[in-house]
Length: 107
Image 1 (spheres, rainbow, N blue to C red):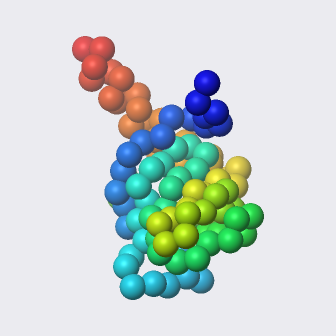
Image 2: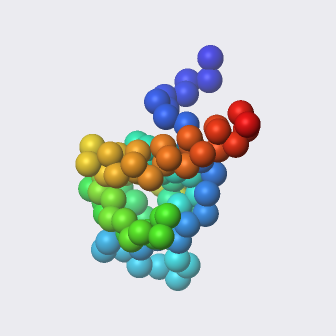
């Protein structure tokens, strides 16, 4: 057993984002995304449990997501767990893309 706690599949992705209240030399970017959270590559210090807000462009839309820092790797990045409303927003963006991929493979 791997100890995997994720409830939704993650997608490897690279999207630059802005983190409210944080700045650094390199632009942070999301490298892993699911309906309920993401992994943000960032050299900025992130405190586990702290509230966070990020902004990104996904599917041609500017999205603001809120949540909390679930885990942190200093000078590497952190995992973010979305608040319920942000999870609903991501579900609206990710599920149609998943359905299109499934239909393409089935046909």
